[in-house]
Length: 300
Ligand SMILES: [Zn+2]
Image 1 (cartoon, protein in one colour):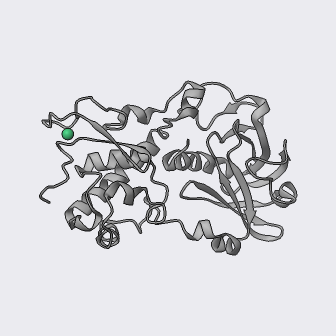
Image 2: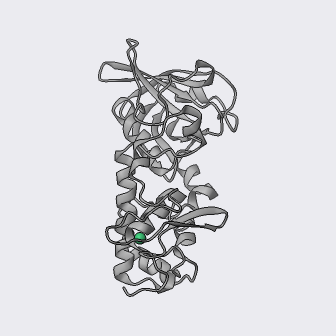
């Protein structure tokens, strides 16, 4: 299941071929993914220029200057969606060879294709999605802003809005434990279970610490840990610990950087801690933590 870092990796990988490019030759090989493709999808993309490749939470937002005016091509990768970029001369140049798949994608899972032309160069953009939980939408910027799911997304954890002050003030008003607060997509968008466990361990905070008891220095530590964990994962090409990874037989490099996730019963990796990683369930999801260096009651 691609999480925020994987989606960000895809975005950064697509920028060289797509940002500033003009789209043409759009082909759909089926009528739908999770949902039907937008009405006249191909025709509306035809000739559009990609002005910006953005991301919000786990949504890729391709800003387009289309014939009908500004549009946003929204893509969600679902569980198994992936883009592949090839130079049009046929030499394949996979974007994501450092994570997700060692194997070449199967042509029967190729659902969307288009050409991106820029600076006299032409790239073939292929979208594969074996399980088809992904989806694509096409809407005006105004319509996107008005969508309830979009408006409900919390602060973007890699944006400048996400800082210690914001986190401190937000959590001050909440008695819920840190794990649940960090997983709440209406507060912070796109933080998944793995990254929350890692950030809490790195900042030495218990998953059960009530939000309102967090001190300002702790908020600063936690904010910094979240950014670092996400940036490290983006640098490593995402973690891709999931059934998707096991389906392809290849795991991302970030899994080797996981310090606490999926390490129940193993020794804590913090120097001098001596604790053993424990696991408990919060809202149906496993939380991995060290009871020794992530104590519930602690000094700031
Ligand atoms: Zn420890």
